[in-house]
Each structure stands twice: as structure tokens, then as C-alpha cells.
Image 1 (cartoon, rainbow over the protein chains, first blue to last red):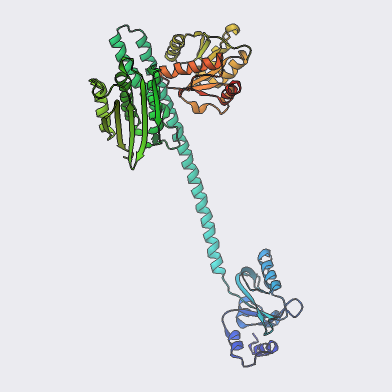
Image 2 (cartoon, helix red, strand yellow; image 1 turned 90 degrees about the horizontal axis):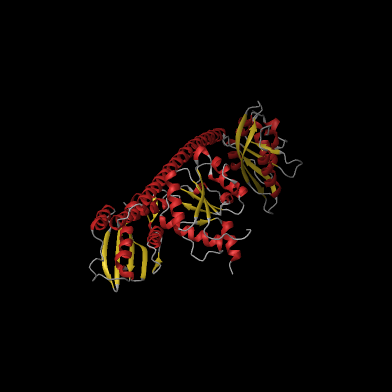
Length: 366
Length: 154
């Protein structure tokens, strides 16, 4: 390198800087590759480059001075990035870009180029100052990271599609089992109905009817299960309304009206069958006892979520608590108390003169 | 529809489970209608006499010999264009959004009350539309069928 020529160059461009200018000396000596170009000349040629730039590019000063910076570009240099530099020069603003540049020997390096205009006191751009930094290692590291990221993403995608397929298979299986359970419940109901037709003894026939009602309650539970996206939860609000309206309908008592005030309450699906049977006992009991002797009336159903507790209230305006047989007895009573314990529900019978209110409250989570 | 049907309705049952077919038949007769035919598969529906003229057909989706109630529905609509087709299935999700030309669905497991009130509702809809009873929870009308009723309502 013709290091001794350096001061000539700083002198050549330095009409506002002295020869012994310590700033010029610093630029010459720094390890940061730097060039200065002169936009006043045709094609904005390099008028100064320091030693570090010669080392980085592999060219001698004589091969550098007087040329436009584009001689560092090669076939794989990103044209769009080059265009950005071009636009910054035209707009006389500064710019920072990473460019793939070529050394004299044809090898490449990633150049973190920082270019800024240098203005005189009048604000006119007299030079462009460019510093370069070889960031090949950083760019390579980024390339490796993005390749690995792509691999990881592909792997995640493959695993996700495996899991989705497994979930689909599980969902299909669930629906298949659900279908069979429903078919079997339908057959149990059919068997009981066919048997009931052949019985003439009213006492036996009434017991069989009660049995059929319980099976129907379970059927109502199963019709409503797995209807939402979350198969583990079950809306006990809509279910209660559905069940009570089935029970009232099945009684063929057109003189009993149903009024409901329902809000959605999601509970674990595992509780559905027990809750269904409890509600069935309460509702059939109300119809048989509260509205005995042809007494007409209204059954009101209310469900609400109070904190972590679900509340279900079934109120009738029939024969009140003073009447002897207003609460269920026998197996009905046993079913309510045992199943309530299982779902941790409190069942309270209270006076709602003239009728009775049954309140069921239970925690909605396990 | 060429002249409305009058009760008792002629009902066709397409169900491969003998027990359910018997149960449905008993309930149809309790409701005062007539069972004119029973079939367990698509082939048995093909073999039914052409002059059967059912007003209403209850059709299961999964039938004997691997046949489908959706195909049975299409066949019934072709053979007896005036027949109302109601699917009775444990898998209502298998029914396409347009009900494959069918008129409604009764989901299994059904209760006696569910089936009887659905039948009363359908009878009203067939013989003297639109139905005056509220639509029971046990019956879901196909959108096109329900729309027909809303057009005939005063």
C-alpha cells in the first residue's frame, strides 16, 4: 500500500481542512473502513479511502480512487438494497443497509454500510461519507438461525397435523360411542314402552311409567351432550328447561303452564346424568303431588350462576308444604338425596305460598 | 302439494332396528294414524308397491345392508313426491344443511311424549298448515319446510 500518498489525498479534498488536521489523521488510521465520495464530479466517484478500506476490499488505492462505489457489487448483491442507497444519495439523506459486496479476489463479504451526506456552512452537500463494517459473521449467524427457525416451524407443523389427525380420530370415536349410547337408550325406552302396553295392573303400570320417565330423563341428557365444541362441559340451564318441558309435556296436563328464566351454566359433562335424574324426580313429583286432584297451575324454572355456584329453582303454585305428600318418598326421595350428595348439591324445599319451591345449588367446578 | 292429506295419515317406517320399528308403529297407531309399510334398507324401499302413497315417512339414517337414509329420502321423494320425510336418528349432525330434501328430524333417543308431540305438530303442518302448536323440542323442521309454513301463515 502506498500509505505515504494519504496526506496528498486528504490535502486534495481538504480545502476546508488543514494538512495536519488531527481528524483527517484519525480517519486515515482508524480500523473502520471508510470512503469519501464527491457528488460534484460525474458519477459521484470515491475521492478518499483509508487503509482499512483497502484491506477490506483487497484493492489498492489506485484501483479505488475515481471509481463509483458500485464496483464492490456483484451478481448476488441485492438490487433492492442498492436502489435504497441510490435513493438516499438522491435525497441527500443518510442510510444504513447490509449489502453483499465482492473483494478483488471475487470472495464476498457482508458490508454494513453507513452513508451520510457532509454539508458545508451553506448547507450544500459537498461529500458523502461512508463507513463499512464486515458483518459476514453476523449475517451468517442470522441465516443459520432463520434456517433453523424454518426447520423448527416445519417440525411443529408436522407435529400439529399429527395431533390434529389424532384429535379427529378421537372425536370420531367419541361420536361413534355417543351414537351407540343413544341407540341403546332408545332401545331401552322402546322395550319399556312395549312392555308397558301389555300390563293391565295399574299399580305395576304406574311403576313402569315412572321407570320410563327416568330413562327419558337420561335420554334428554344424552341428546344434549356433546352438542357444543367443548365436549367436557354441559349447559345445565338449557337442559333444565328442556327436561321440565318434556316432563310437563309427557304428563299430558295441558292445564300446567311452564314459565322459565334461564341462564347458561356450564358444568362438567360427568355430572349431567345425576343432575338429570334429580331434576326429573323434582319435576314429576311437582306434577303428581302439587297439581294433584286436577289442580291447574304454573311451574316456574329459574337458573342462575352465583359466583361458583349454580342455582336451579323449581317453583310451583300447587298444594303447598302443608299437604302431606308434597315431598317425594320411596325411591324418588332416595335418588334425590344420594345423587345430590354425589354432585355436592344442596336441595332445599321451602314454602312459596301457595306452592313449594325446590332450590338446588352446587359448585360448578370439581 | 296436490291437495292436502287428511288424518289418519298413511305412514311409512324405514328403520333397521326391529324393536324401534315396533315401538314407533305402536305410537303412530296411538296417535290415530296408519302404518302402511315398513322397510329396513334402501332395497326394501325400492321393493315397496308403487301405490303405497305414504303421506309421511319416518326414516333412520344408518340402515341395514350399509344403506343410507339420505338415499332413502331421495328415493321416497322421487317415488311419492307428496310424502313428508322426517329423519329419526341418533346422529343429527350427519344430516346436511339442506336436509337432503327431507322435511325435518326427530333426534334419538326420543321419548313417547317427544315423538307424539312431534307427530301432532307434523300432522298440523301436513293437513292444515301452518301448525298451530308450538314446535316441540323433539322436532326440528328443515329450513325449506319451515319457510313453506311461514308463507302459508295468515
